[in-house]
Length: 159
Image (cartoon, rainbow, N blue to C red; front, top):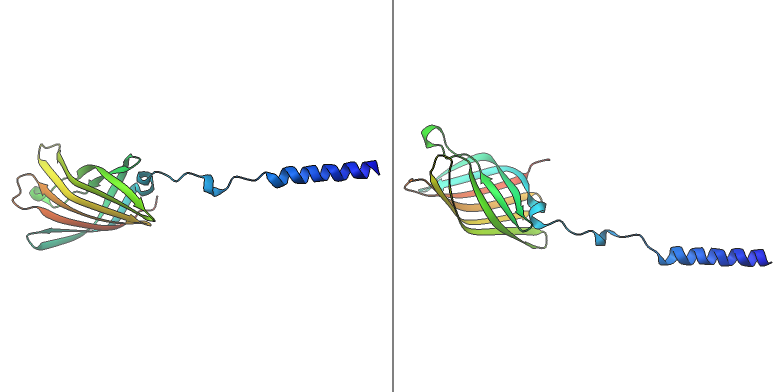
């Protein structure tokens, strides 16, 4: 009888130990920083408009994590021959997250190309949702008399 009582108490103790301990849940996994969530290559349609004339092309925009809350993007090369605008980096687009959407804004970024031409990218607005990005911007390059209005809509490329 004592062995039976001892076995019952041992089983009760084991059940109590396993009953009060639990495995860690997915709730404890921290969410990746917003910049890491959106970093990558996106391929889609870019529309550049100058003086009312629109030019549409398939392009790839590359967003890289600059900090946990900001990304850099490289606008792809545009044009042909002597009218080519080189790829232009834009740095420090600040991001915020609301629900499943991550948005970014930057009023103005000024840079200089390797060839010494100044450029300004302004009124940058970017919105990431699922694996899609929409970005609008204004671009002024070198001494060109007119600026470009740009819009890019793309999907994240497979890694």
